[in-house]
Length: 227
Image (cartoon, rainbow, N blue to C red; front, side, top):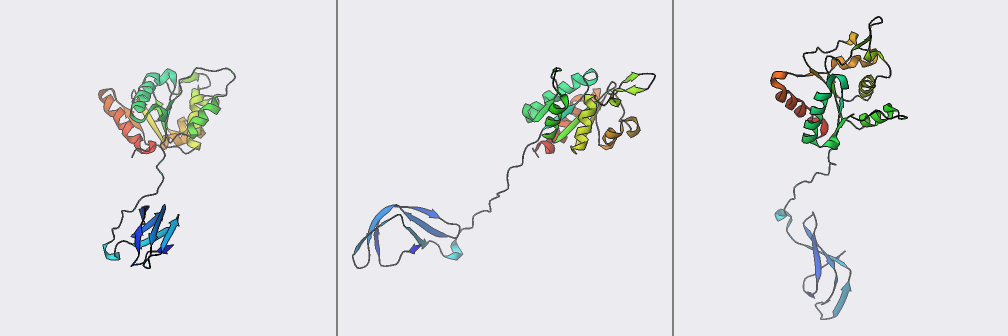
């Protein structure tokens, strides 16, 4: 890099950039000048630098953050249709309004022949950062009285698969209880779902329905990346 010397006369056109060390970096486009002896010189595409400010008077620029933007997450809503379809739909609408529909998953698709539901659900869970498990009176119904078999005892039950996969992926889980049901005890659940009992729950009350929904929305903000 060349430095300009005193005693020279310059007739030129150039662009100027200020570096972060307080100097003027001059990138010459194309100009000619005469030095102190009057000898014309022509310069093209050179770089020149001149001290612009004494060190004590240079401005310090604010430090810029180069941290990448925090990725936004997605909320997976797990529910049983015959138990909580209306509430699950309401949660989907409210969360979609707050975070955008692309940030909320609710499985409302019809059964498709020849399709392994586990592949589709696992893909959605792997891209989720929080999971709501909606639990009502018919969440784990008895299906065989004589054997005391419940829906969650079935290996191919889709609700069991959703919760088991969510726990395996260590996704934060919020159980959402409504219609005055109690939180399932570990001994009431299949072994691979017992971890569900230890997550802090949320409850929906008829007398404060809107406030309870808002509490869930606000609790999900950090998981979606909005706080």
